[in-house]
Image 1 (cartoon, rainbow, N blue to C red):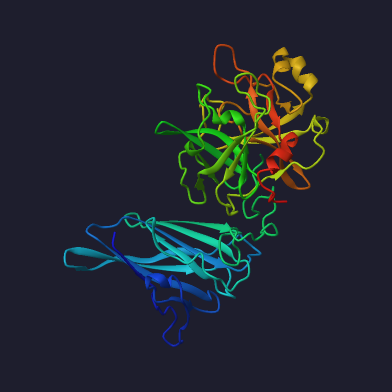
Image 2 (tube, helix red, strand yellow):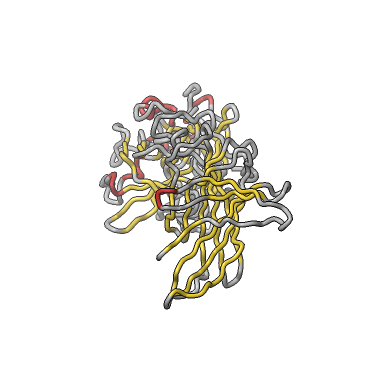
Length: 453
């Protein structure tokens, strides 16, 4: 696709008023002349106005535009600005190709100082990228605006995303800056509505569990979902060890694994706000032996680069309190995942969450002698035993969290459950075994000393 892009110097006020414009250079490496902020009136104040065109031999019905900009710290994230198409029409053709002309408008949440536009994308093609430049604002925050436009129906669909820290000169994770003052662990973005924390559980709203990670692996050339997991820092993901063995008990190679942060719909891995990453290493606890025992069923995935925290990607806290199991017996934790639902689907399209109470090892063994062979000092049992609620097939590796001092804190990893006789379906009339993450804290931290507090 041949693209030509520039920004429109455009007057939107009455002819009796002299339009005010501010020139702000952006994406200069591709010859872009200017970005113009235009002062409209005391109510609307400043807006960004631009135009772009493409030469297609046929009419474009579906258009997507992405505009990213760096802004000062937002005290209120309920409004992140807006992006809309003002006009989209055909201009006289060049030779035999039609030229489609598009004018768009950007509104910003902060007027003083005006944000820096950092990236422009049309129909998934990058037009310019200034995200690595030096910004005048100290520790800027990033706002991503996404617009989908259908010229046939004239409908526009707009979404926005707030990214508190991102790779940039003044806020670069790669340069070792600490953004924990912006994003603490175990906190959701308050601009999202909280839905109470999956079999028989409640479908969660996107952004409610920003630390929930999906794990995939290749088998030959086929890619399949394997497990849930939990993001606990810029580079570490905690999940179950058994997620990295195939049906023949062979270990999965690191290069055959990928994780998706911020995923919501399993059918849409490339949703806006999600991030697909290949790990630097997959580390299975040395005491785990899949053929003989489920003990130490825990793994740490180390990501190759620091991830940026956003509305949809944030870390859970790692347990720091007393690691005695007695302290959580009787307490209700929250788990979430894409596992089997009450309708028999092996995976659910959207993640669900459920509350499950922790029980003592004695109560777990008394309920079924089989648990005497499954539980140990580094596991605990939880569940309702009501046949309907709790983690099931497909929820392996996912988190069990408790609130501690107002923060969601990781204590358990979904490990194993008993099966209904003559089936491969989990039996929710029995308890579920979780790996006790608190017993592995030192081992987990050996992969990174930069946990978010």
